[in-house]
Figure 1 (tube, helix red, strand yellow):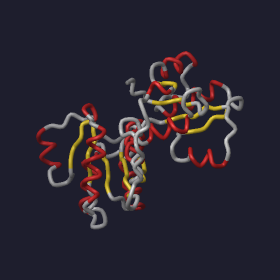
Figure 2 (figure 1 turned 90 degrees about the vertical axis):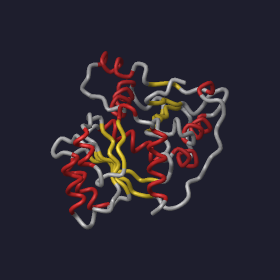
Figure 3 (figure 1 turned 60 degrees about the vertical axis):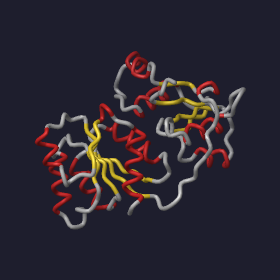
Figure 4 (figure 1 turned 45 degrees about the vertical axis):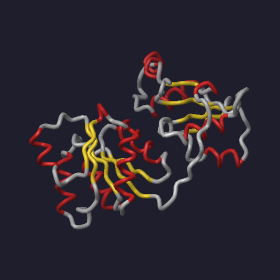
Length: 241
């Protein structure tokens, strides 16, 4: 109902254990991308930690940290500034964190195990929060391993290093333009065949769209992003390879 930016979850609850609820979150396309921070007094076994691995942003044992540390971690996870004052930290997280309970979900959906190889995807976007969101969306499917680059040059180096199956590219970057990076990709025989999906907040003019034709697979606007449509598009694009 509330679609929070982050969930703080206890593993011990009176009506439903946190592991079951976490499983429900991560197997539902509508909630799989939401980062989960576990804060619990439960003594975790090796098996418990194994169940949490890869599914939670972090794990905090009650009594072993102070509130300020947790708030700073939450703000950093959401892309905030750690140098903000305590009052600003409180305001920054207000309305963005939901404490999970059974009422937040009707029932756990059936679990679908991913099949096939895990594919590498690189997201090139100077907005770390947007890059992190795309990473979580794709990695939540279990089908992709996603790397983030926050500039054109670092993106280029990462592309040469990992040879990804697909690139998600913003057109506005701090050092070179997304179009410059596209041109470099298409001129190099080692990268010219890598499919590129543009995801940008930039207002694209007709002339820009024309220049992009033939260089990219598709263009998604951040303001109107349909997360499910993006995941489906990536799935369909890479299913034929």
